[in-house]
Image (cartoon, rainbow, N blue to C red; front, side, top):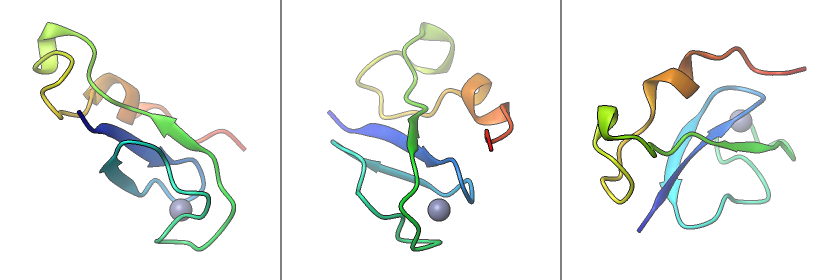
Length: 61
Ligand SMILES: [Zn+2]
């Protein structure tokens, strides 16, 4: 099962088991936020979907 991760610097989203140390998009040592779907609304755990509720949040600076 892959998780969905969102870069807190540039908002880049990728899907893999664990987040990379460096963002492949902005090349910074950023924090990846887990935006995987865990609710049935977006397909449930294991669906590989992204939770739209988590995507909406602005990046923390
Ligand atoms: Zn990034």
